Length: 328
Ligand SMILES: [Zn+2]
Image 1 (cartoon, rainbow, N blue to C red):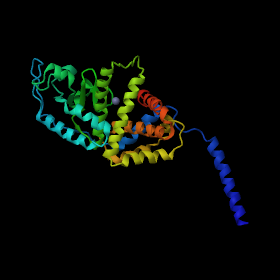
Image 2 (image 1 turned 120 degrees about the vertical axis):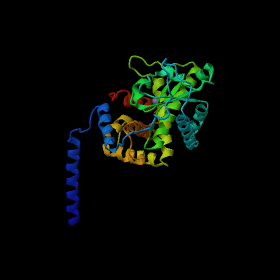
Image 3 (image 1 turned 45 degrees about the vertical axis):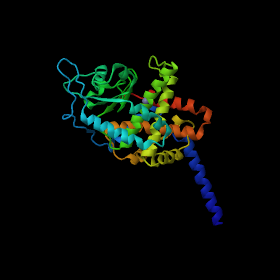
Image 4 (image 1 turned 30 degrees about the horizontal axis):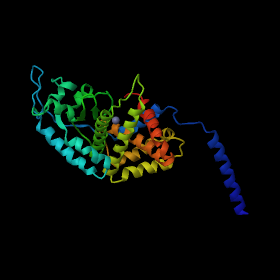
């Protein structure tokens, strides 16, 4: 008797719950950029003050005629050596290993802000005098810059904390300390990947065809490659905790596509993932969240899409995630 009544109550609850679920208004934002920007703010409470290096003692001085001296600061040399050593942590990742030679052959320089207005091409003259023009053309240029130079040196005027400029084959790195060095490393490898892609495209005679605000498939595919490598760096940097949390969030939602998954992600999910890396400065926080979104969507694709279609799906994900969002 009791059993029957329990069953009847249970059936009634199911019926009501099903009814409510079916007719509940769709509460999720319909717009992907809107969803992205709502979630972007979820990391705001986890931000530290950005640690800018003290550049005053180490500045590379530019004389009055605008001709830069060929004197590379000791600090930059030191920091660069430190960075190169650190990047060896990722030798287990074949793609990362493949980028090491590019870095080993690079030359390093620096630009500071304030009263020394220096721009992209001029920066390149600030490298060691012993480097010939031909060598300069072939070698990757690594340029450290102060954050007051942000808008002057960065090519895309994006929220990127580091950037590879294919026009002059230069990797720009900001003079800030990242709260979590693995995030910085992921970013550097992402940009190094672009430097490698540029060389491969030159060899193959391929050019990308981005035009009129439309991103080409070639560019999207290159970004997918670079973001995947960034994710692998974070995997190693977090001793496997990052992919575990990505999978845990993935398991919470039923989605019909990678974008649909992103639409379902909640602030608490992003914070849960972000806890792996600790609190961040604002630039670092922005970089992290882009990585999380891509890696979440890509993990959905890996779990749900047949191998033949994964490339095409990831390309679409990249285009929707990174190209439709409002510029900050
Ligand atoms: Zn990129």
